[in-house]
Amino acid sequence: MNEDPQPDPRPAAEHGSGWRSRALLVGGAVLVLIIAGFAVAAFAMSGTSLGADPNALAKVDAQTFGGTVEQVHATGPSGKPIPVAVRAGRVIPKQKVRPGETISVDVVVKRPAVVGWLVGSEQHEHLTLQAPVAQARTRWLTVKQGAPPRVAFDQPVRAVAYGVPGQLRHRVFASPRRSVSLGSRQSAGTVVIAAAPRAWERLGGPQSVTWFPAGDSPSVAASPAPGTEVSPATPLRLTFSKPVEEVLGSARPTLSPAASGSWHQVDSHTLLFRPSGYGAGLSTNLEAKLPKQVDVIESDGSLHSADTIAWSIPTGSTLRLQQLLAQAGYLPVDWKPTGTPVARTPAGELRAAVEPPRGHFRWRYPNVPPSLRESWSAGDENVITEGAVMAFESQHEMEVDGSAGSEVWDALLRTAIAGKRSSEPGYSYVYVTESIPERVTLWHNGKTIFTADANTGIPGAETALGTYPVFEHLEETTMSGENPDGSHYEDPGIMWVSYFNGGDALHSFDRPSYGSPQSLGCVEMRLEDAAEIWPYTPIGTLVTVAS
Image (cartoon, rainbow, N blue to C red):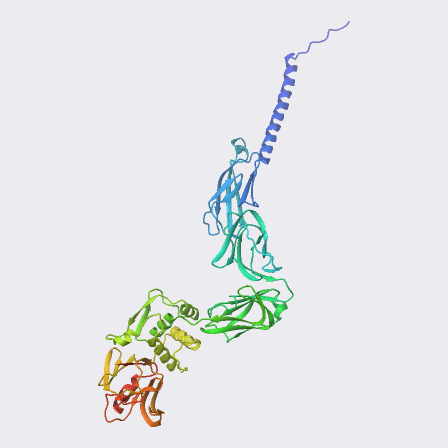
């Protein structure tokens, strides 16, 4: 007997719900994978980079989900802010910066909100870089005749300035250039040139560029140019068309007159003489003697073969000469600067000798004789200054000529640095009148301290009128010469003699009377009167003879 099948005890609905659960689980997993994929993609495409740019200071590159630039800060080496603008992701300074300057750039990027919750709302980037510097590829150019010199740079430049210091030509280019023509120039010469690789940069430090004519013979360009005036403290630069060792070997130029300082080879083509101390001194002609002949480039660009290069060192200014003599007590006036005193160094005194400082003179004593006062003029050559120079020369055991040459200037500068003063106690002045009775008056340190009768020259042998400095000072001598009638005289044992104009002198001479013309041009006095005046009339003392 067949048995009936037993019914399934589970409800029919349970079969459908199982499939649905599995479907939900699969869908959820897919959704999680989609979200995870989006998160991975968002993270991968949310980056921002900050790097260098060939034209701008820096460039910000943001990916699809990178966001937007929120802040940009740039600072210089001292931390000083540099204003910048951002254009198409490029960071551009709003003010000129110096080539080679170290700059820090900080950027803050704001990410979109949709990815911000995943990878952060902001990204910070930092970059330290140096503003580019352009250098001339070579500083020694060989130029064919008629062709303009052209300077090539190691990278493109947007602006240049070239010429001689103080007279530079500035050029700005619409697009970068690798080389710059200096235009029509002499066949040889030297310029300084400065360049800026970027439009937002200042010009860089100047470089010296020298060009030479094409040829087999070596050439030399001197700076300062040959034949020009230089100061004792001016460095002398010699730039050769070929390496120094190839032209001169191990030998070096010699200077005449000898100057304190030394030669240095600053690069393969250039020698530099750096003066020290007083250099070659003032009022000299300076020559650099080369070991061999070369083509010397003259100031007008022409060439001539020579083994010497010459410059002139001018004398110091008359005004500074007077200032120094006054400070040292050789003049009847004092001088004081209105500003900072001149530095008591060779460099400071040499500079002041050529460019005298501002200041003012004033008379050292009251009651200055009008004839002495009228002889003084600040900044102009005059007999008072000449007498002071002669006094200085005498006290420093130099040849007395009243001319401030190199030896006098050298000693004056050393005296100024040491703060030394004249060894004479004060300032004296002698005034002789030819009105009867003829008199000689001694003025010293603001007072008339002696007056005596005197004899001046007879007709035909008159004592010359004017003011003259004493140039010879003798306790006793033999005086000789020619009488108006042509006969010769010779008088030994003349005492207390001070020559002031040719053969004219203050001295003693025995006469029956004094106060009238009796001499052969001299100013004669009694023995005791001449002895009284003589100590006050050293070399340089001024003597005025008036009618």
